Length: 229
Ligand code: ATP
Image 1: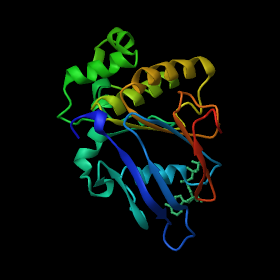
Image 2 (image 1 turned 180 degrees about the horizontal axis):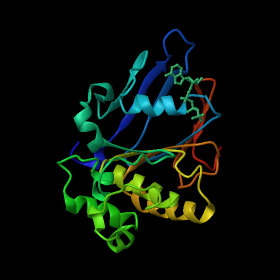
Image 3 (image 1 turned 60 degrees about the vertical axis):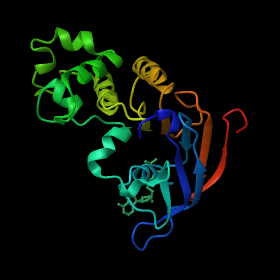
């Protein structure tokens, strides 16, 4: 995918069930425009997280396909996935290593400059520079970063490869309102140039959505602009 203006994600009549279970998702059809912001809303267990796994090609639909510009996401090699999808969920998983490693996940193709840029983007550059060894500081204690800073690091990790599609799974669920505001303002900055899919329990979403999709019993109950719903 060379030009993000052309990135088009489509759900082509997909259904999905875990082995022997009932359909979790049923006949989902959606065509997103490049850089569209979509929020999926639905009750716990309706299948929102499953849908994200399908989008990233980690699960295969029982029926139908999800495509990016016509390419089945299930056929995208794992090594390519970080360049296409940035995924953020509610928790940040610290890996063994330095601050820079937290962002690159020790992927040698990510340069120091890219990691620095990502830190800057999420507003953590000054804080990291204040640490004794800066980006080379080993993260071996749990209190080097606050919970909110960890969530910002998670975003830095997701955007460092400059992927055209961001997937946000309840990213502000466990945060206080001040931290939430910080996260939202960073995501707003990213929203101009990314297709953003987010999952939320609430209709009032964190970043302005073009489309809200309400899932119920595995189906799209309603999809449209937030004003209409
Ligand atoms: P939440 O809002 O709580 O995260 P969700 O809408 O994201 O919920 P999913 O996590 O996608 O829902 O789960 C949808 C359904 O699929 C649930 O009934 C869940 O129990 C079931 N499920 C999830 N993962 C598996 C699995 N690996 N094997 C079998 N069933 C699963």
